[in-house]
Length: 503
Image (cartoon, rainbow, N blue to C red):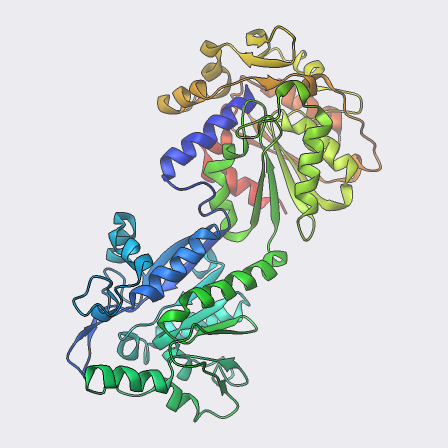
């Protein structure tokens, strides 16, 4: 039943966020675009370039990142006419990706309400990406606040990118020692040959100066360009630059490459759901936790969309699934198990203790050597689950009486969540519930353990939780939340605060 709650949680999370599966699960990227301006050269209204926002936005989103858009002044941003796929000039008529971005109400809401840069917390982002367009040549070139934001972020070592005319900031952005950031760096930006093409196209000089011309005057700076309008991007350390409007995807892909390299710089959490649930149970937690961490959610066999028949699943199958996920990570992980998963993560910690930095139990079963879930649950006088279990005729799977699901696992959840929990409840493999764990002091006993109690729990009773922690004797610290069995659903922020406080 505890597990069931998790599943419900996952589903409701999807409903609330209205996002595609896995959207935002890797953290957040900040894109910075120009506010509207008027060109002193042409008299045109100018701003950002559609493809330099839409294309990298799509690339980051497809890779599982949430994308926020900021501008120096905040509020609405405008796009250069030539970059609009529906502009009468037909200059960008081929750009179907930007057309889709333009027609998406959610994206339009973002560009009408961009974040004000001075109010942005850079710690919330794993990378930043400065977009170009005609506007930056006026709105970015002397914007010292933007220059400082860019260099401060760069100095954290996280991926720091700029493309096209957005690279104009690199002509003046300085390090704390007074040197230009791009001294000693290989970088690119809008080429003079491309400026000449644009000038010829409209019959006048568009920009007040040319980035490449000024860049080549800077000593010890390697400004590099590809043939005109070829997709081209460079990475020098954590500085990433793109040449022009056709380079947004290429630059974004280099950002993703660097983000993958930097996974080792973040703590890794492996989250394991309980019974009658699947990996989406962590929907309320996953994206927020991923802002400053790597987050891996495990889907156990015969749960959710995993179609192994319940009758074929053993405890060892659960253990192998989690072990494989952990072994794919670059370093040690914090392994988090909810409810039934407490049994499984305990055996995983026994098998690969060198890969587990911390073991966190969330209203979960905490076994001793030779114990199993059913024997522990039989000691629980507060749980409403035991008396509500219903087994299939061959005892290979179990469910909970519908009328008992909500009272047992989420009495403090909103009604719509309770309804979802009941709707998606389906049979749970029964065999793993009765299989015993084999634990030793030298392995399982050596892994630091923490426990998050749920004081109003009617699935795994609070008294049993306390009893198991006391019997284990090695739990370093316990925390308490005044919730039912789903603390990460009903008090998400408090849950994340507790989880991330465990050092």
